[in-house]
Amino acid sequence: MKVVTAQTMQELDRQTIRELGIPGLELMEHAGHACMEAIFHEFGYNGGKRAFIFAGRGNNGGDGYVIARLLWQSGWQVRVCILAERDRIEGDAAINLEQLPSDAISYCTVPDQLAGLCQQEIRQADVIVDALLGTGLNSEVGGIYREAVGLINASGRPVLAVDIPSGIHGSSGRVLGCAVRATVTVTFAAAKLGHILYPGAEYTGRLVVADIGIPAELIEQASGCEFITSDNIRPLLRPRDRQAHKGHFGHCLIVAGSRGKTGAAALSANSAVRTGSGLVTLVVPESLNPILEIKTTEAMTVPLADAGSGYLSDGAFQKIAGLLPGRDALAIGPGLGQEPTTVALVQSLVRMADLPLVIDADGLNAVSQSTDCLLNKKSSSVVLTPHPGEMARLLGTTIADVEHDRIATARRFAAAFGVHLILKGSRTVIAAPDGSVAINGSGNPGMASGGMGDVLTGIIVSLLGQGRSAWDACRLGVFIHGYAADLVAQDKGEIGMNAGDVQEKIPYVYQKLIT
Image (tube, rainbow, N blue to C red):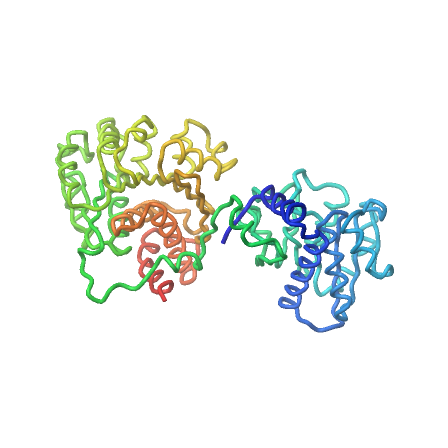
């Protein structure tokens, strides 16, 4: 599903009306019809039901006036409360307002009077329509609008939001002071970032994207992001050939583990196995090999001398380099530690390796000490998988700066260093060197637990080793990761979920998605 900013949507509206000559009044009529159909679908077609519509004075309010007229013509009892004076309503909105019966409309611009005017009717409504503020909102909600939002949220009634819940920033999902909590939101032409990014996603309810007559080619050509769901992941998956063997599914090499962090190495290797790799080899410090031989039954291990320290050093470089021929992808970092000689090893491997490469965890910490190694890399497919803290270290900035605009942060870094970047978190962001961005739609808060990133590393390196492009491996990998966690949540709930639970659900994701 394509997702755009509020600004992009405004430009699409402008092009449609001014350049293609499709009247705004026509678009408004289509928007009202789409909302009416959603109301019927959600709450029933029966005449005699009651709708209470809160409307502003702009085009969002105009959509509300169309909805009111259509419901009224269908036999519903409709009440419209407009938070503006009549003479301030202009253009297409005013034309649609004129088509409503005057006794169905009330105007209120004084906050203290709003509750007395409409509270009883709100309680009697079968549905409340939020047509107050659209995607162009950029300032905090205040005054009578704030009071209206409070009345809607306190009503306990189902709510349909027109285009976006009032109070949600259309491009960031931020709550601008307060916001309507919708049961269903009907948006037009394309989803907006405010619908899918948190906290806006929590306020949106079920999202319906309606065609209102903006040409599909305009939407397709507009800049935007991909929102990853099962619908756009399924085409990337297919059943295995009945004559396939392990040689068809890649051989991954994973450099991981240090004293106290053998679990990270095991999780990454075992997750690569669960994701379908034909062969997985784990390079580990020699003194830890007995532990990892037990923890990784299906993966092979290559122990390298560590003088009993439990850390790989730059002395392991030549031996690891000798392991690369015949392997299909390389991952560096889970549980590797941050000893100076280990940091030097990571930086050397990043410069030298020509395989598809995943860098995670302590690998990222090593790279953050000299990001120039990324500019001197040989591999044409490098994937970095930082959480916000690791991203801040890579950029030499703060977590708050990273989180202020996750999409812009990821996009800039991917372009500057020629890498694919997976910025983990709620709604994980994937950015490609060419500026493409995707946002993951799977996953849940139960994933806020140690080891989840190690599982993702194993998934991504496995997909790269099976011949996936970096872009496909990243999109498919983060979705599988989150969906596996969603399956765990269905069985056990979110609290207490661990990385091993998620790892074990990976095959079930394939089972559900491959048709």
